[in-house]
Image (cartoon, rainbow, N blue to C red; front, side):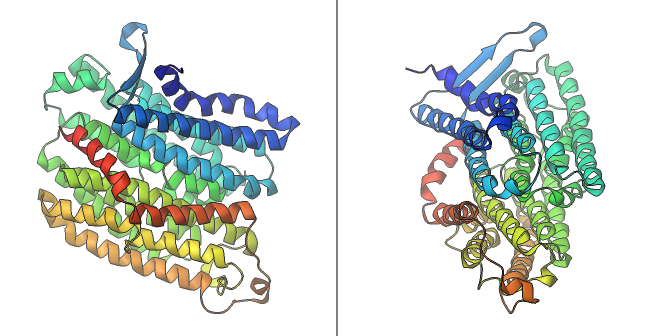
Length: 481
């Protein structure tokens, strides 16, 4: 029988170990490289699912490796960590599958898979970490990996935008690390359970501000949002990873881990953060409505929707936290689908400008239907998963001090519908804007199956919402107790 700690370590280190050997393997066999890349992430997903079953049976799995100076390496598979790990590894596996035929047209494929695997493994390490120093280390590993992936095409303009993403996220992370050290000087520990007991709800203003700066920078919340739309120059599977369930969700996850599950802030802080989330939602939604680049429109949509998740956590009640976690799942599935559909469109039409597109529903019916379903989920159309997530968030807000922010998020929801309908109409409806579009064909079988699967999961997450919500509500209860 496999040791429980080995399962937890497998969830984290299977992708990291594969990242270290994937490039040499790729020199001999591209097929073997692809198979091992997918197998590593699927192994991580299987381990995460096994941890879910152990958790539901009442077992909390943890692993500790003692080091001097209180720098013990601690991983804990609690409900919040297992939920985030399953969502991230599931969507990452689909994205890698999609990459097989997407990335085959480009050089540096060995490097691509190595950085993607390190990216996924770092996310696993981050969500399971209960020690702030190791959380920071994994946080920075995701930043380095995303930096290399954003600048994958190596054009001068691409490298500039990759540098911008690195500077914003790493700069925020250094402020966050300063907050962690300040927190250590007060509590005497970097371990979250110890910090929770020692602080007893009292935390200096400066500590909150420093840690919050890192969280907002990573999740691209206003005023740190500009790096994320610029990251659209990366390959579409990379932008799907950044936006769907891995990179930008790290910030809101850490907010939940620190400021909801372990340290309770004053109501003034939660109202301020909720107000900032509302402003970020409205501004980015307006920017999406003005854009013509398909990937930048979807990117601004991500910034806007992250505001809803942060808003839910600031409600500090069961429906708010449950709705925020559920929306992490549904938004991740739908947004990955939208970006991967955009990748099919870009590769087959050689443009991202929606003014040069049109009529693609005739030659890309599977992509069109998948795009429509995923967009409808983000818009919050029933019975798709996004509807139930937003319904829970708004219901939670009316039972909290955040009720005054509901009108702003409702306006954001209407703008979301407007720009996504505009996007779908411009790309898929009407007539082809030029003769070349008439000859456009669907993407490869693997790419189309990947976006179809994400659309199907977006639908199932709504129709079968009770299944994930049963677990998510238990996670939320554990967070708020």
